[in-house]
Image (cartoon, rainbow over the protein chains, first blue to last red):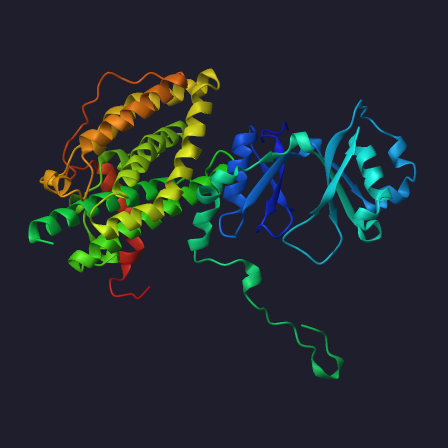
Length: 184
Length: 251
């Protein structure tokens, strides 16, 4: 069956100016402009945000720690070739606990290809590489950003909505029964 | 505020609120049926915003008449609604919904812009607050009109068919209510003639750039907001059904 969905874009959201951009999921859209609008409708309806980035999913290099360890020469096997260097954004996942977001912005490097950029990032002190579970490498020229002067109309309405994120509510944890009966 | 002005203002607020309410309901009918998941969510968001706008106008009106929004929404008959016929028409295909929404959003954004300068402070403040959402609505629907008009032969044909049907209906939005000129003289609401010219200056070139032709006929099927099609009765029978099952229920 042919896929009738539009191309997929990964979405990165910055909750407030003091926080880093985080991956929150993806949307399908026919082009960059609608990707940004769809991302706002899907991910910023109620949570706060000051900035949204969308990136065509096909342009992102995604590597898990296991994949990297399984092939120690992974960076030599590069399908891309590049002359000159370009900026790449490095995103990483350093915790297994967060459920609402995935990778978080960790910094930038300059390189000729995405794999070269990742290799460089892993060799630098900047990226805490021993704590990373997942790496994403995003070419700067593929990022489509929301505009600063649109912040109000894009994001402000969310502040008045009365619904809350699930994390706002406490939860009741299961209690272990006495005498070693099964946990509920 | 003298009695005449108060009465005219409550009439105007009812018209504005009813427009938003009925349009919100038509848009919400797409939930679960949108062409793609993200659009389903987007249109549901827009519908929810409109419901919020309707509530703002009903509540503002309540400060003048004591009439409760829930009573107005769930227990009026079709003949007592004051929306334009444009918003009660069935949702049609995606092109129809998007084109109707575009024509309405362009009107509403201009209206809100002008209302922010109203001498009636509560109205000016409320409009300023809602305006942000409307900017976003228009951005969304105009993106769609461009893509539908300039997309495939089918998308262009469907959008043109929608425009052929909706253009005349949209003109009812600019028909002033009886006595409205008094509100205009008091600088409480803008002049509909001025609003119409600005609207026309924006939408006509935009539609043309999207490879769509505006029809010659601009005469709306009716100029009275008391005049409704059977579509409104059908819509209300669905929208009011649950509330009417038990009139005394507390929600």
